[in-house]
Length: 436
Image 1 (cartoon, rainbow, N blue to C red):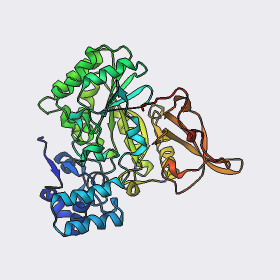
Image 2: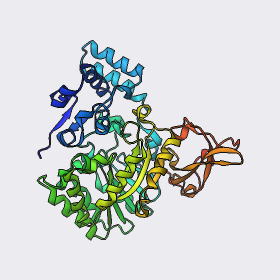
Image 3: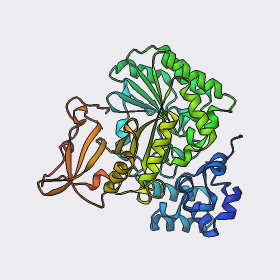
Image 4: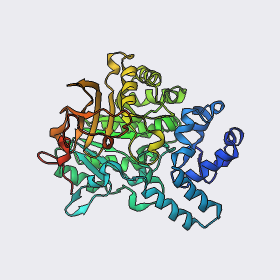
């Protein structure tokens, strides 16, 4: 299949849009799409979306902007500007004003940028001691954009909000100075938009440096869902797989952190073949997704998704809570409901599927795991723990929050038992990752 992409400029060329969407729905896509990024390709359109179930189809919700993704005020502001038929500069100015009101960098991402010899490494985040995130400049786009994406600022043309770095030399030097880092996660965007040649320009120097402490290379990617032909029929598909083999043969563990948000993404022949080819290189595929209203907010979808992933040889890894950015209000699932979805879903899979952890919030202090809801001393509480923390000493230390049925994020929670604050509210100290 030849790759064809549609953006806001040409989405009206999609035949199904013209057939199944009203003029009002098309107008909403244009208004929202001028604020939040929109990009979709022919594989998603032809093989994933059920156009007979619009607008309810989960893959349509996952890729096409919806009216409710902006507040009434934000929608009206952009709609008003567009009705005046202004120039691009005026549209961009209003869009940027709205974007800055949508918490473009959640969880203190800008605080995670480290320095090396006084140089700020704007393409690296180092929040957790053992894991470093690397944003290759050639991987700062995706085959299609998720409407929930917490890294949406990477795609809206605001360079001051981007994370990206080209210099592998700086990455290598940083790793050599920080032997506590065992894992490098290539992220973006999506590193798998790169050609095999471009990706090798990052990987080869990293392997040649022979950094003993580097044990795992991870690749965060949605490509298996949005463009599995990357590993099948693209002209350099075999070259990419040979590069995966090279990483594995170097003695490092290679893990693709694959984003699958709904079981329908796992049902095409193309994705199943792509998974088999990747696993044949010796790489591992771990799967993850946030739990989101309109897409996967029922336990049956998760059970089906985890079962299919296990059948294909993938490892269920994370159920996340949608981050507090962008269209969070549209997708947000209450923490209590998210936990019940997880519990009902995971208890219907076998033990090898219970590797999945969640629901987890990637918040400012760390990854907060919701263990459940219970009663302690006649008080209904959330039981939580850190899976990762800015301070490693916080990890797996249980704590309690007052039960709130409406809470959708960590900031909505208050300490239980009349305490004034959570133990981590006093800030990072001790054996912690400090980057500034």
